[in-house]
Length: 378
Image (cartoon, rainbow, N blue to C red; front, side, top):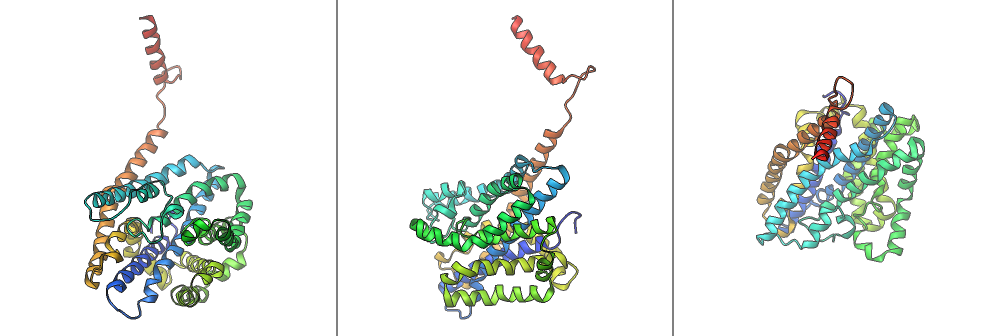
């Protein structure tokens, strides 16, 4: 395991992406074949997003707080610079490919969906029944979190940020209720918008801040115990889907999203604290770590290959999973890794020492002044 990496996080990313792929594959198969017992697998997609949101809040907040401990501040520009190079190239490459398919008539994607995806507004402006770019709602919510939460951390400080994150987690049902009554036009997007899905990402922030602040050790310790994590996993993959099937939106509106976030958080706390256990070894195994590292590309590219509107046979759906994995590898090798190499080069250039003359004066600035003086003489 690489030094400085948090144990199991790559494996949890792999789990999140695998759940989304499994859920979409089950939807695509269920659309063309009367296969019984697919409901729990279809529900896996939603669980994958919840796990991803909790992991994201935990990881981003932890990284920013460690930077504050190390440097005394949070460099917002540097954070956004790194995130832009991590997200934008792969996302733009995917959107360009979808634009080619749309231009060729293979995919029906109205132009407004491209602009919403480009500006990361799919969660608020996209329609839930649109498939080709519909999955980008979660990336839109994630990008909005990247934009808003780091400045809040910087301005609030760790202790007040912990209170705000906990308050947002607890107030999430009220945010949903207020949106339902005050903005009826947003009701079709209730399951997708950042502020109506804030539970999971804020709980990840709460866990990271509580650890950094030394608060809530008893609660965190209880959630990170093996039996609690096992019960949480059982709830995520069995109990929550059955509750949603029985009570639908009423369950998630008031209790479900929060309960599922707590369950995902318990799994996260246990997995990061017990990498040597059997499940921990699986999450930190080479295949899981690799799948975690290509998980962003897999998240992007599984959508067109697992399109329930295409009426593919079960065999073609399974082939689509393989194609999505292949495209994730291509994205990693030819888009994401070169983008990261360019980012590292730009960061090195920005931090190179400025050449100075023997008087200690910036040589480049001297040359520029001399050039302007020469032109003035002419």
